[in-house]
Image 1 (cartoon, rainbow, N blue to C red):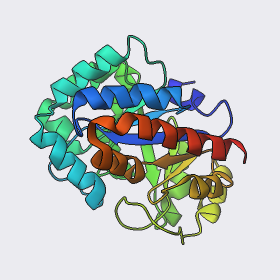
Image 2 (cartoon, helix red, strand yellow):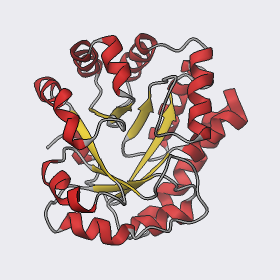
Image 3 (tube, rainbow, N blue to C red):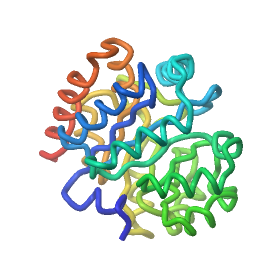
Image 4 (cartoon, helix red, strand yellow):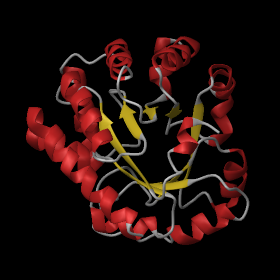
Length: 258
Protein backbone atom coordinates (compact mmCIF):
# COMPACT_ATOMS: atom_id res chain seq x y z
CA UNK A 1 0.00 0.00 0.00
CA UNK A 2 1.32 3.44 -0.91
CA UNK A 3 1.64 6.34 1.53
CA UNK A 4 -1.15 8.05 -0.39
CA UNK A 5 -3.55 5.17 0.18
CA UNK A 6 -2.73 5.26 3.90
CA UNK A 7 -4.00 8.83 4.06
CA UNK A 8 -7.50 7.33 3.96
CA UNK A 9 -6.96 4.87 6.82
CA UNK A 10 -8.31 7.11 9.57
CA UNK A 11 -11.77 8.10 8.43
CA UNK A 12 -12.64 10.78 5.90
CA UNK A 13 -9.50 12.38 4.49
CA UNK A 14 -8.97 16.10 4.00
CA UNK A 15 -6.65 17.08 1.15
CA UNK A 16 -5.77 20.80 1.01
CA UNK A 17 -4.00 22.40 -1.96
CA UNK A 18 -1.59 25.32 -1.96
CA UNK A 19 0.39 27.05 -4.72
CA UNK A 20 4.08 26.95 -3.89
CA UNK A 21 5.70 30.38 -3.67
CA UNK A 22 2.54 32.43 -3.11
CA UNK A 23 3.41 34.80 -1.55
CA UNK A 24 6.81 33.19 -0.86
CA UNK A 25 8.29 29.73 -0.39
CA UNK A 26 8.95 30.50 3.27
CA UNK A 27 5.23 31.12 3.76
CA UNK A 28 4.42 27.97 1.78
CA UNK A 29 6.65 25.89 4.06
CA UNK A 30 5.09 27.42 7.16
CA UNK A 31 1.63 26.74 5.71
CA UNK A 32 2.43 23.07 5.05
CA UNK A 33 3.47 22.66 8.68
CA UNK A 34 0.31 24.45 9.80
CA UNK A 35 -1.90 22.23 7.65
CA UNK A 36 -0.26 19.10 9.03
CA UNK A 37 -0.85 20.34 12.59
CA UNK A 38 -4.49 21.03 11.75
CA UNK A 39 -5.08 17.45 10.60
CA UNK A 40 -4.53 17.44 6.84
CA UNK A 41 -4.24 13.84 5.68
CA UNK A 42 -2.51 14.54 2.36
CA UNK A 43 -1.26 17.84 0.92
CA UNK A 44 -1.23 18.91 -2.74
CA UNK A 45 1.62 21.23 -3.66
CA UNK A 46 1.09 23.19 -6.85
CA UNK A 47 4.23 23.94 -8.85
CA UNK A 48 3.58 27.31 -10.50
CA UNK A 49 3.15 27.33 -14.26
CA UNK A 50 2.40 30.19 -16.62
CA UNK A 51 -0.57 28.50 -18.32
CA UNK A 52 -2.45 26.33 -15.77
CA UNK A 53 -5.37 25.34 -17.99
CA UNK A 54 -7.45 23.54 -15.32
CA UNK A 55 -7.39 26.49 -12.96
CA UNK A 56 -9.84 29.29 -12.39
CA UNK A 57 -8.84 32.89 -11.73
CA UNK A 58 -7.93 32.38 -8.05
CA UNK A 59 -5.28 29.72 -8.59
CA UNK A 60 -4.17 31.12 -11.95
CA UNK A 61 -3.38 34.45 -10.28
CA UNK A 62 -1.56 32.63 -7.48
CA UNK A 63 0.61 30.94 -10.13
CA UNK A 64 1.46 34.31 -11.63
CA UNK A 65 2.29 35.81 -8.22
CA UNK A 66 4.52 32.86 -7.37
CA UNK A 67 6.38 33.10 -10.68
CA UNK A 68 6.78 36.86 -10.24
CA UNK A 69 8.28 36.18 -6.80
CA UNK A 70 10.97 34.06 -8.46
CA UNK A 71 9.65 30.60 -7.64
CA UNK A 72 11.29 27.85 -9.68
CA UNK A 73 10.93 24.06 -9.73
CA UNK A 74 14.36 23.64 -8.17
CA UNK A 75 13.47 26.03 -5.35
CA UNK A 76 10.28 24.04 -4.72
CA UNK A 77 12.35 20.84 -4.56
CA UNK A 78 14.70 22.47 -2.04
CA UNK A 79 11.71 23.54 0.09
CA UNK A 80 10.27 20.01 0.11
CA UNK A 81 13.64 18.49 0.99
CA UNK A 82 13.81 20.77 4.03
CA UNK A 83 10.17 20.10 4.97
CA UNK A 84 10.68 16.35 4.88
CA UNK A 85 13.06 16.61 7.83
CA UNK A 86 9.99 17.02 10.05
CA UNK A 87 6.79 16.79 7.96
CA UNK A 88 5.38 13.26 7.73
CA UNK A 89 2.04 13.82 5.96
CA UNK A 90 1.90 12.39 2.40
CA UNK A 91 2.40 15.04 -0.29
CA UNK A 92 1.83 15.11 -4.04
CA UNK A 93 2.75 17.63 -6.70
CA UNK A 94 -0.06 19.05 -8.82
CA UNK A 95 1.39 20.48 -11.98
CA UNK A 96 1.29 20.38 -15.76
CA UNK A 97 2.96 18.19 -18.36
CA UNK A 98 5.08 21.05 -19.71
CA UNK A 99 6.69 21.48 -16.30
CA UNK A 100 7.90 17.88 -16.44
CA UNK A 101 8.90 18.09 -20.10
CA UNK A 102 10.90 21.28 -19.65
CA UNK A 103 12.70 19.91 -16.59
CA UNK A 104 13.17 16.47 -18.13
CA UNK A 105 10.50 13.96 -17.18
CA UNK A 106 12.74 11.31 -15.66
CA UNK A 107 14.88 13.90 -13.90
CA UNK A 108 11.76 15.52 -12.44
CA UNK A 109 10.20 12.24 -11.28
CA UNK A 110 13.47 10.85 -9.89
CA UNK A 111 14.13 14.04 -7.95
CA UNK A 112 10.56 14.09 -6.62
CA UNK A 113 11.09 10.60 -5.24
CA UNK A 114 14.47 11.53 -3.80
CA UNK A 115 13.10 14.50 -1.80
CA UNK A 116 10.20 12.47 -0.39
CA UNK A 117 7.17 13.24 -2.54
CA UNK A 118 4.55 10.52 -2.89
CA UNK A 119 2.96 11.15 -6.27
CA UNK A 120 1.62 13.49 -8.93
CA UNK A 121 -1.61 14.96 -10.25
CA UNK A 122 -1.19 16.18 -13.85
CA UNK A 123 -4.59 17.50 -14.92
CA UNK A 124 -3.71 18.14 -18.57
CA UNK A 125 -2.69 14.50 -19.17
CA UNK A 126 -5.75 12.38 -20.03
CA UNK A 127 -5.90 8.82 -18.74
CA UNK A 128 -5.29 7.52 -22.26
CA UNK A 129 -2.01 9.46 -22.51
CA UNK A 130 -0.58 8.71 -19.08
CA UNK A 131 1.90 6.16 -20.48
CA UNK A 132 4.09 9.21 -21.12
CA UNK A 133 4.77 9.28 -17.37
CA UNK A 134 3.41 6.09 -15.78
CA UNK A 135 6.43 3.81 -16.38
CA UNK A 136 8.72 6.42 -14.80
CA UNK A 137 6.39 6.82 -11.83
CA UNK A 138 6.47 3.05 -11.33
CA UNK A 139 10.25 2.98 -11.68
CA UNK A 140 10.65 5.50 -8.85
CA UNK A 141 7.77 4.30 -6.67
CA UNK A 142 5.41 7.27 -7.05
CA UNK A 143 1.66 7.23 -7.67
CA UNK A 144 0.21 8.95 -10.74
CA UNK A 145 -3.24 10.06 -9.58
CA UNK A 146 -6.06 9.66 -12.10
CA UNK A 147 -8.99 12.06 -12.43
CA UNK A 148 -12.58 11.43 -13.47
CA UNK A 149 -15.01 14.18 -14.42
CA UNK A 150 -18.82 14.31 -14.68
CA UNK A 151 -18.33 13.62 -18.40
CA UNK A 152 -16.20 10.49 -17.83
CA UNK A 153 -19.18 8.11 -17.69
CA UNK A 154 -18.05 5.56 -20.26
CA UNK A 155 -14.44 5.66 -19.07
CA UNK A 156 -14.90 5.99 -15.32
CA UNK A 157 -14.87 2.28 -14.56
CA UNK A 158 -11.79 1.67 -16.70
CA UNK A 159 -9.96 4.55 -15.04
CA UNK A 160 -10.97 3.32 -11.57
CA UNK A 161 -9.71 -0.20 -12.18
CA UNK A 162 -6.23 1.06 -13.02
CA UNK A 163 -6.03 4.06 -10.67
CA UNK A 164 -3.22 4.48 -8.14
CA UNK A 165 -3.22 6.06 -4.69
CA UNK A 166 -6.67 7.61 -4.85
CA UNK A 167 -9.13 8.64 -7.52
CA UNK A 168 -9.61 12.39 -7.94
CA UNK A 169 -13.32 12.89 -8.64
CA UNK A 170 -14.01 16.27 -10.23
CA UNK A 171 -17.29 17.57 -8.85
CA UNK A 172 -18.04 20.20 -11.47
CA UNK A 173 -17.50 20.92 -15.13
CA UNK A 174 -15.01 23.67 -15.96
CA UNK A 175 -12.02 24.95 -14.04
CA UNK A 176 -11.18 25.07 -10.34
CA UNK A 177 -12.79 27.66 -8.10
CA UNK A 178 -15.14 27.96 -5.17
CA UNK A 179 -18.81 27.40 -5.95
CA UNK A 180 -21.89 28.10 -3.86
CA UNK A 181 -23.43 24.75 -4.82
CA UNK A 182 -22.31 21.47 -6.39
CA UNK A 183 -24.95 20.57 -8.96
CA UNK A 184 -23.57 17.43 -10.60
CA UNK A 185 -24.65 13.97 -9.44
CA UNK A 186 -21.33 13.15 -7.86
CA UNK A 187 -22.89 10.44 -5.68
CA UNK A 188 -23.83 8.41 -8.77
CA UNK A 189 -20.35 8.82 -10.27
CA UNK A 190 -18.68 7.54 -7.12
CA UNK A 191 -21.15 4.67 -6.72
CA UNK A 192 -20.28 3.56 -10.26
CA UNK A 193 -16.58 3.61 -9.43
CA UNK A 194 -17.02 1.75 -6.15
CA UNK A 195 -18.66 -1.17 -7.96
CA UNK A 196 -15.41 -1.96 -9.76
CA UNK A 197 -12.64 -0.73 -7.46
CA UNK A 198 -11.85 -0.36 -3.80
CA UNK A 199 -9.59 2.62 -4.42
CA UNK A 200 -10.33 5.66 -2.22
CA UNK A 201 -12.25 8.45 -3.95
CA UNK A 202 -11.78 12.13 -3.09
CA UNK A 203 -13.96 14.94 -4.45
CA UNK A 204 -12.41 18.20 -5.60
CA UNK A 205 -13.20 21.35 -7.65
CA UNK A 206 -15.67 23.81 -6.18
CA UNK A 207 -15.73 22.88 -2.48
CA UNK A 208 -15.22 26.07 -0.53
CA UNK A 209 -16.19 25.59 3.13
CA UNK A 210 -16.63 23.08 5.94
CA UNK A 211 -20.37 22.63 5.29
CA UNK A 212 -19.86 21.72 1.62
CA UNK A 213 -16.96 19.45 2.59
CA UNK A 214 -19.14 17.56 5.05
CA UNK A 215 -21.86 17.15 2.40
CA UNK A 216 -19.37 15.76 -0.14
CA UNK A 217 -17.80 13.50 2.49
CA UNK A 218 -21.12 11.67 2.70
CA UNK A 219 -20.40 10.24 -0.75
CA UNK A 220 -16.60 10.04 -0.90
CA UNK A 221 -13.61 8.91 1.14
CA UNK A 222 -12.11 12.39 1.14
CA UNK A 223 -12.48 15.98 0.02
CA UNK A 224 -10.07 18.36 -1.71
CA UNK A 225 -10.08 22.14 -1.28
CA UNK A 226 -7.78 24.50 -3.18
CA UNK A 227 -9.19 27.86 -4.23
CA UNK A 228 -10.60 28.73 -0.80
CA UNK A 229 -7.16 28.16 0.74
CA UNK A 230 -5.34 30.02 -2.02
CA UNK A 231 -7.73 32.93 -1.43
CA UNK A 232 -6.51 33.09 2.16
CA UNK A 233 -2.94 33.33 0.88
CA UNK A 234 -3.95 36.23 -1.33
CA UNK A 235 -5.88 37.99 1.44
CA UNK A 236 -3.45 37.58 4.33
CA UNK A 237 -0.04 37.18 2.67
CA UNK A 238 2.69 36.56 5.22
CA UNK A 239 0.07 36.04 7.95
CA UNK A 240 -1.86 33.43 5.96
CA UNK A 241 -0.58 30.25 7.70
CA UNK A 242 -2.50 30.89 10.94
CA UNK A 243 -5.74 31.53 9.04
CA UNK A 244 -5.21 28.47 6.88
CA UNK A 245 -4.51 26.33 9.95
CA UNK A 246 -7.84 27.43 11.43
CA UNK A 247 -9.65 26.74 8.14
CA UNK A 248 -8.11 23.27 7.71
CA UNK A 249 -8.98 22.35 11.28
CA UNK A 250 -12.60 23.45 10.76
CA UNK A 251 -12.94 21.33 7.61
CA UNK A 252 -11.28 18.30 9.17
CA UNK A 253 -13.58 18.56 12.19
CA UNK A 254 -16.66 18.82 9.95
CA UNK A 255 -15.86 15.80 7.79
CA UNK A 256 -14.83 13.71 10.81
CA UNK A 257 -18.43 13.85 11.98
CA UNK A 258 -19.81 12.32 8.77
